[in-house]
Image (cartoon, rainbow, N blue to C red; front, side, top):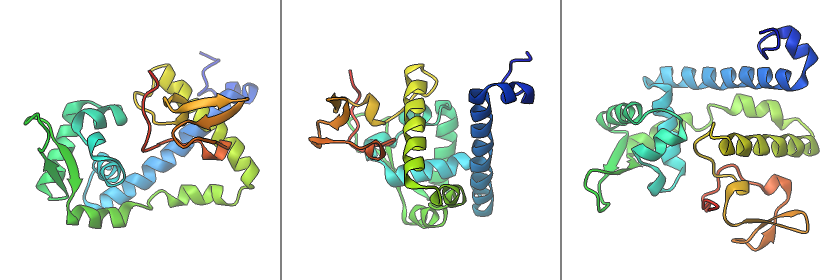
Length: 201
């Protein structure tokens, strides 16, 4: 157990362990900021995350099944959160699909008002990066995007919409390329959450 990444001595000997420990600290900061905002609004963190997801994603992704995969939680947990959001009149269930049992979610006017208050809750984290030189930011982002794609390939993350896993992604002469946009992609152009993403089969 001495080689556990949670052991400070192991962290001193292994930079990868130290990075994972650092990411855990950043994750705690994100959760703390989210919890503070949720508590102030009388909502739970998962309810805030659902509202934010619905606000910025296509209707066909805004359903219980997809959200369960998106947030790596169970369908009943999502259903409970959605039921409360609907009772609070923050979302509207749209049953316009051919299957009368399934629905997508839309924000109500009250839901949009909540988004106006929550959309920037993570800005204190972003500010920590804003002062970094652009080259360092691009390098950091490149590594993060590759780690996210690797976690998806190893089935640790259920959902990802990054360029690397998209059917439109290609490499031309060693450079990243998007066949949908018909253009080369700089490393900073790689997306983590692309609205045009289609699974590379």
